[in-house]
Amino acid sequence: MLKLDNVTKVYRVGAFGGKTLTAVGDVSFDVRPGEVVSLIGESGSGKSTIGKMILGLTPVTGGSITLDGVPVAPGKEYYRHVQGVFQDPFSCYNPVFKADRVFQMIKEAYYPGVSAKDWAVRVNAAVRDVRLDPDQVLGRYPHQLSGGQLQRLLIARALLLDLKLLIADEITSMLDASTRIDVLNLLAELKERGLGVLYVTHDLSLGTYLAERTVVLRHGRVVEMGETDKVFGNPLHPYTRQLLAAVPRLHASWEEAEPVTDCPYHRGEASGGLFEAEEGHFVACARLESCPE
Ligand SMILES: Nc1ncnc2c1ncn2[C@@H]1O[C@H](COP(=O)(O)OP(=O)(O)OP(=O)(O)O)[C@@H](O)[C@H]1O
Image (tube, rainbow, N blue to C red; front, side, top):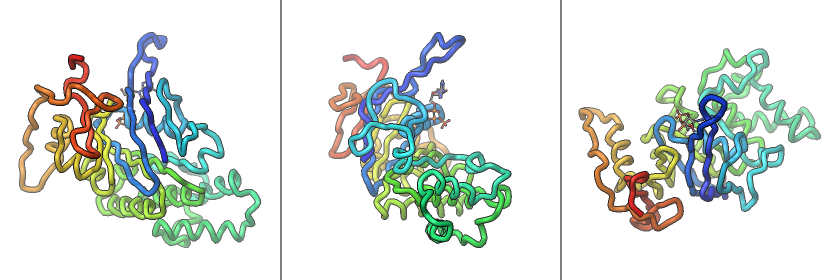
């Protein structure tokens, strides 16, 4: 299980790093095996920073992140269990190498003793698992494949490892609508295999599609989280309501959600200043910065 406890990330910004920016503040949640958790928030809310900290690409400033009780330790052993797939699949491939080079790199790093023949069998199986035809995709250059095919090959690559957790950061935002649903369904299959998935997105409708639990982030802090049905069936935080109001609906014009005026949850009773409004459903103060103690 992945566990974030009061995780904070402060970046040094400005000329000569003289100022600080708290990109993530006091964030706590977990991702259990066989579960998809979606991390939702507007641009700049700190979603990718959380993904990067989990992947060990940037250190935490405060708090802790553990996988099965062990702190994040970027290195070969950690990446055997935790992998990330990102928005732009093209950037993960070297254009001068054929796309299946990404599989070869996994073999060299993790399975040097496996024979070429056995490895080809494993790769073909993983490629079929992501519903691609190995004959159609292996041996092609990245520019000869679609974004959806490249994204699936990256997921197949992750499947060759002994994966426990996949960080999927905006992985569908560059895909067309039908390919997007295919990739989401693929993620849903991965959880059936016992994998935990952190699905990072700014798109509410995609997040709700497959996540058991949802974490709503704003300005680096969790404003609401819990079982997806509860968070979106009974949204309590005005920001969550605003997000929901912003989802385009057929035959309905856009209506502005109520502004944040008052907050019934100004006294957080749980970690991270969250109040348990109903079982499995937590909400933060809506006036977080100005909230009286
Ligand atoms: N390396 C960095 N140095 C300084 N500030 C950073 C750095 N990376 C991110 N930030 C800042 O931290 C905040 C959170 O950024 P982050 O990329 O995590 O947001 P996000 O929710 O993933 O946004 P988006 O959806 O646009 O990718 C932003 O204000 C961003 O400008």
